Image 1 (tube, rainbow, N blue to C red):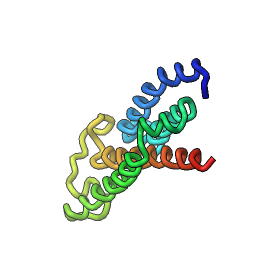
Image 2: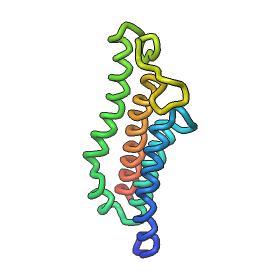
Image 3: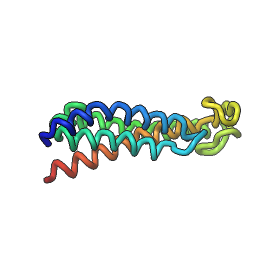
Length: 140
């Protein structure tokens, strides 16, 4: 797309969308949101960038190799956190019973491993959305 207005607005708004996506991921355990919805917001910001500037520019911004690594690391992070519960004497993804610090309800540092899990989910969802969209565009 060669529209200067769309490119200018996209350049201005994408960082704010990404900050909001990170906020949703990090605060998902104390407010509506979480890893999936925050990851969808992050992925959508890069889809907007791709639609405005084209696939070559978006691929320079976040290459396919990086999204592949993020997809893998997001799910590995989730599995490693889940296995930590087993290592500490509980079940897979166990939280309080394994002795994780639960904090005070309603505060940012609370909910044990749930914020860590939502981080992994957010990374996985965002990178998968970007990869799928770039793959679909490459086929056209």
